[in-house]
Length: 273
Image (cartoon, one colour):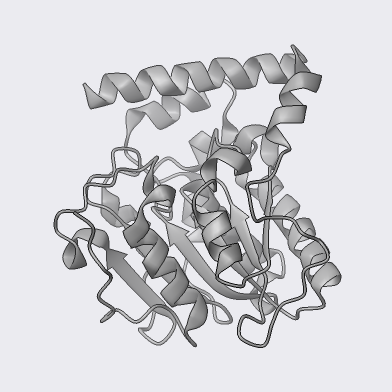
């Protein structure tokens, strides 16, 4: 049932993106999708000494910033962070290098507006993996303090639906398929280049990034922390799409952002339910 439901979602998403690319109702669609989530994109915000890096939220494939970050964005803003979000790559379906260039430009705009030297990136799915291309190949290593990946597709997925979507209007889906040319290049040693700290959050109930261990990165413990949510909260049944709305995830994100280095692997979040 879960696989069929996912296929229906991807099929509908592909159809929506295709219509957008053809220009059908493009203006009305843009008006909706360009609205940022609550708490984000106050371009007058200046980072505090407690939270010196602005946070850039990077959504996943077929997602909009407003939907993907409806929960986490206001939480981070209420915690005192300057929060920013953007849509990229035609619903994040463009090739990863092209989207990474958009991220580079957006981070530069955020740093220019806030006066900060570095930004923290929090990304979901593709949004957790794609920034690594920016970090590794487009100069982001000197501009990113933390990269927090929420169920990121770091090593791709063996889910056949990724290729099925890629055969329509989703080059990034092909890039996110296990063994793709893009991922071979991205994951050539080192997977986690020096500069940023990396916190990677995975759930064993992930039905999109398969296997869920594909989210994890190799690297020294002083700048890479891999977290399986169920190791600390066994009853957490969060799946892929809703991970950004999970309160256990939110706790890990904040601990990663507030700590020097990646999230402490010994941290024990408050387990809900």
